[in-house]
Image (cartoon, rainbow, N blue to C red; front, side, top):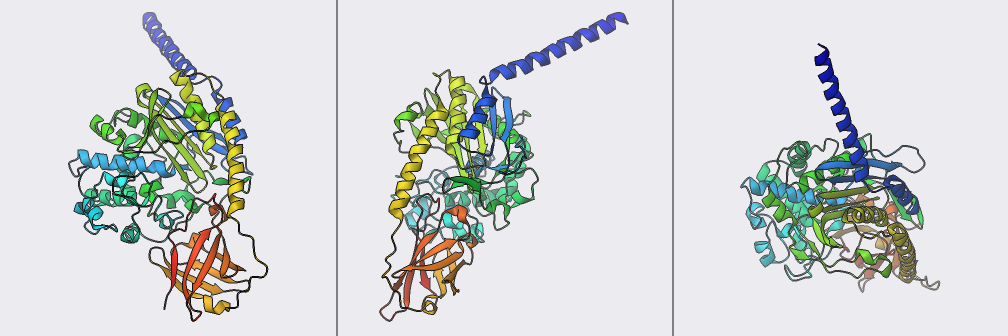
Length: 525
């Protein structure tokens, strides 16, 4: 009996030592002083809160929250706090298609019209020849961000209704020649998934990816965001000050754009997602959702992206190659290839960076639109594992932010038009008010008010606002949603008899993510 107790105690000791050794190795596997470094990043870039995931060699080294969920509170971000991952959702859409390819239900070079017979672009040749692969790589010929007003902020259009407007969106580049980032074609990819799987995109991602990978807290419908308890608020820098912004993610308006940017996730779940991607589809629980052959497809660059020269202060970040694969971007950082993506949506930005040769993955999710914050963390971590020379990324991005702010102020000043006090407009408001329609974005009502007119978009409610006379034939629209930074000049063109021929909108602030370049309102007779 004594011998039995001896061996039991011996093995218990070995187990304890093993656990202690493993815990110690995990601690030393991380860059020294990382917590303090991240806290300094939060302070420098005025980010209320963020979460960080680091995986290496199939292990989670770090999944942790930092800072607070909402300014004015003490509610701490933790490893399960949900953030919008925005366009990082595109990698999930591409992965879902790869899984259908492996099931034999799809080929990457299938024509879209073979699965969506109603699909139509503005050019018949492109309609006929656009492939499933083409949907993912941003070279269809569309103008960059074309149709985004129907997607972000969310409209009341359905996914099918948005896609049926594709034929009205102009094609400005030759087919398969020019990188021009779009979101709308990812909605078509989502519809292909629906047709071939019999499941809505949201349900496929939930059951076939989240449940298999171990992403129990993640959400595939951003309309559910406000119903979750452990969520981050959204923030942005407006007029130089970081404030809460109107988070349309908390409003149940529509889920049409989910395949392009609707996923909500957290540090724990993104760790499992990166482990699965880095291990060619093998999940942390040792299941397999896709094979190494799909990894080769997902990470292979199809459309090169023009490389910009970085400023001198950020020289170590200069890329030698940059391209778009299937739902991922690929580029080099120093001597290693990095695969990942970024995301930006309504007060949140995120970045995923994976280094296949090091089996390393890093995700940063933030609740303030500061790309400087996530790059300061990612490059710092990459430098440690790549054994690069140390570099002060926080200072470099802080200096760059000062310069960028000055450039923005100058650009905003140039965009402003000084009012001419002698300008008169004699046409009564009642002649301007009425029903208008945009061929793509739908109906708009201009309703007389005591100060000018109310502007109401029937299916784009986040663009509603107040019109006040400015000068000549132009009003200024002040939108209710200040966080969009989309206050606009609204200019009326008249016919010879004084009736309205058309109305154009032009956003005043160059810092806005929106554009009204393709909005043209025509009176509804």
